[in-house]
Length: 102
Image 1 (tube, rainbow, N blue to C red):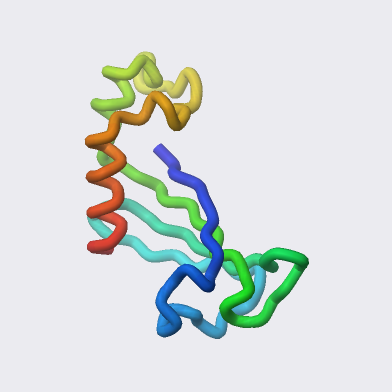
Image 2 (cartoon, one colour):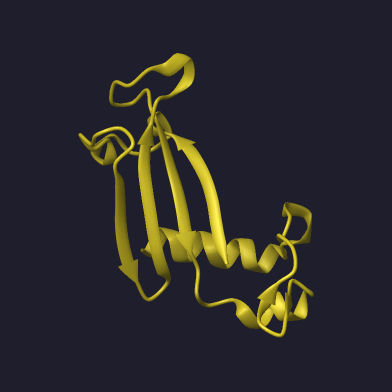
């Protein structure tokens, strides 16, 4: 499962406004999977710290059973994406806790 999103950098704590190059990917491996982040120009193409977007892809290795139960996987092969309204609230809460911990 891959969770993909972006967040305005100004919504993160200022200490997390890293001096990173645009378009360079950064990887962090943990028990929760692999998190890849990249800096992107923000609204109106702004590139100064605090005015950028932080894009992310979280490769989540821990929810194959749930995907099978929801009909996303068939014999280990993904059949479709899991859309927002189909994601159980309990999973969203778990993901929030896991992302904050890692």
